[in-house]
Amino acid sequence: MTEFAKENQKKGRIPFFSHIERTSSSIALKNHWDHFTARIGFRRSWHRVNPGLYALGNPISESPVFVTANYTLSFDALRSALKGLHCYILVLDTKGINVWCAAGGGKFSTDELVDRIGKVSLQEVVKHRVLILPQLSATGVAAHEVRKRSGFRVEYGPVRANDLGEYLKTHQATPEIRQVRFKLHDRLVLIPVEIVHVLVPLLIAAVVLFFAGGFLLSAGAVASVLAGAVLFPALLPWIPTPNFSTKGFVLGGVVTLPFILVMLLGKPEEVLWQRAVWALSYLLAFPPVTAFLALSFTGSTTFTSKSGVKREIYTYFPAMAWMFGGGILCTAAMILLRVFGIK
Image (cartoon, rainbow, N blue to C red; front, side, top):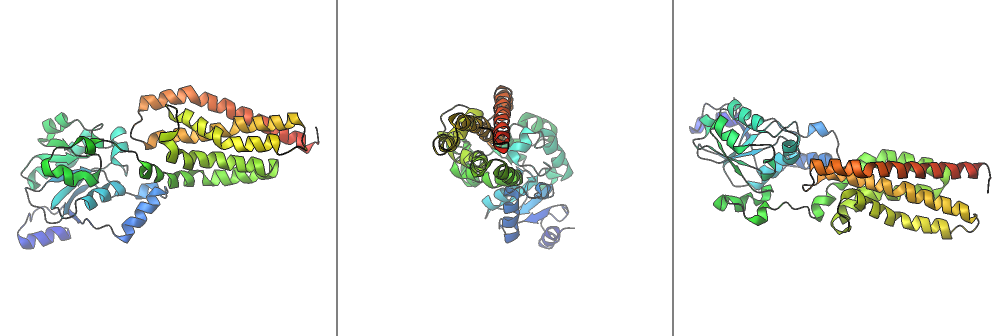
């Protein structure tokens, strides 16, 4: 029997539900550390809580039931937003994946929700038959099926847990709290994990290119990667093209331009055709790197679709590959010419 069950048994509350765990709305230091390590992609499978039913405060049989994923950031965002409220939190087994991604991938699903309701005997814990789900779970949960199979009615709350206080006043979501926002802060929090993912390959490539082709080549490679991993999410809304790949090409071209100009105008000791080929190699190799990294952000936003991403991959990925391959060939040729002293 859990401590929560023992405590409530003494107080005469729901004494027979020994499976209910207790949680609080306080975010402790260890939770902040977990959030930090999750943001940088460290031990991705660690950031999960046990599926099941949790009590926040001292809920009774009339208390509301909120549903979330067992990803720690999702669970912590919900419980911290419910400070001062006595309620239950039903945590689904989404394999440590957040609500939106789990819904799209079939983990936050009708089957899992109905199954979890049965496993925790929710119909015996609460008298009402209402579940409040996050709006972004709607792609994975069919409300009419949940009601048919479990007897519980689904309400889709706001997009963000922080708006639950406003939603609970009327149980009606305003257009403002229904709106999916992807503002600067939402984009910037994606940067650390992207940097961690590219850091080691970037350092290796930078060192190899420095010894093979010099500082300018190495610096150009670093700039193109950082443009895709750092500048792209920050500048996303203001890059004037309709999709991620072309936005990446545009940004990559802008970042590469100074290196092209230095190569063309800043090395008068080299013959013109060599400077031109070096400039061409930069133009071919670096923008596709930025575009490729930009394309990876399609999985981090809430306004892309699976079909749209597939279409973009099929349309632009070949161009990325051909351009990058051509740039590598030009670079390799110029390095060999330099090694053998051919002018």
